[in-house]
Length: 537
Image 1 (cartoon, rainbow, N blue to C red):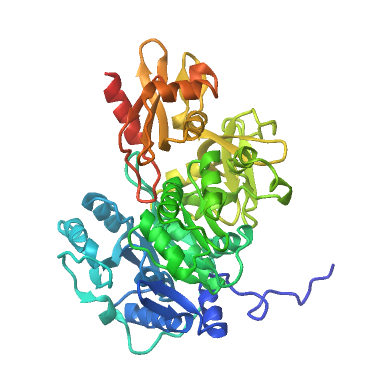
Image 2: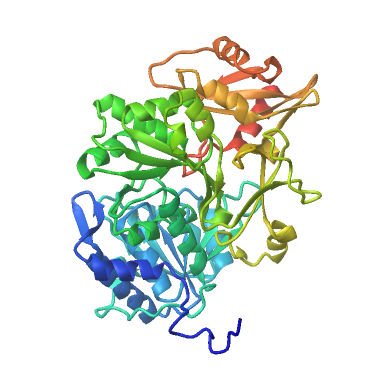
């Protein structure tokens, strides 16, 4: 084919960016509600103007393209506005975990060379500790949220003082590879790594969220997932694209979730399994059942059959996804087929427990032998490492070329998760490589043991880790939290598991105590492994 005269030009090619989602929705649906927070509400037209005024204010305070502007805040209107304003100004937004200690916060600020921090007044004192010993601290902007419990801390100006009188004209980036978000990993081994997202990647993640969740226009989205976590799995931009409502939630609890269901007519929300448990408990406590189907997207541990059944009883449909910080949050979904609707709940739970297939705009998902880089057989038994490639993979780790090259070895992102691939192409995680328990030479999947525990009606949360054993090398140790008001003892739970899976896989010890969790509700297994070592000694 003769392609003379078919060159790329301004008329036929523009950089892909999620900022266009805000611009379009503000132009088409300016009157639609964008944000609710308690009794406060704001339209998309107002949100667009405020985001551009904030961007102009950032520029007026010396923020230049490529600079890093951090935000340390819970799920509030300011976080939604800053998600757009910072990149409109050409800067990179660093979304800081609100549970980080002062030392880790300081490391993230120094490593990223942050120029400005927007901090919620409730977190001001912790930020003050973080910047206390910095040689050159960033400019601090204090956010006075209407529902916050303020603390004392240093600041240079308030959030509202940062806004310019005139909104900044929106100029899309020339290059879609321009950095958009910086998110630090949990740092459970050594220092956290700074994961860099591009305009293109955020847009691809946001679009796939809508496509692969079949999200309609005008959703009412409850922020039970922290906005700082993988920049809210790109959902600030999904909700803008769909002209939906951001229902802000400072503190996630059973009561807060159900109150939002009742008050705002929530249609969608995301979160870890602990959020599922909160939703069920809250609905049962208040006798609430939604008049419409509420859709929940959950990651981390696969939802057990009993939890799915309880969710369905209160009107909540569960979609299981999988991802990591390095892939913008979820990029794999357990895509549901209509013919599965009539299956028994146990069978549906087994299907939903599979992590699934790649997001529409994430090109590649495979399970490979990390040594040979060959695909393992799709027989549901051969174990390999999940690897991905495509549009929803990070740019790389900030200032860490060696770690970036290692993560991308062989032209794919190496997840570190062990999985099988079923004959229908769906992937199912068996464990993190470090979470496999090797007992007497036999490999035991902690997830399989956890699934058996979760099936017990008294179990609210369960985590299984390796406990050192002189005889077996390692044995499974289960940490359990019970449903409020329920009872079960160690012998009962061990017998329960032995009835459902091979006896050698059953835990040798069950510990009943609160488990440490991340800010996103994930159980911190590295802490439980240390606790198991202490119990074994």
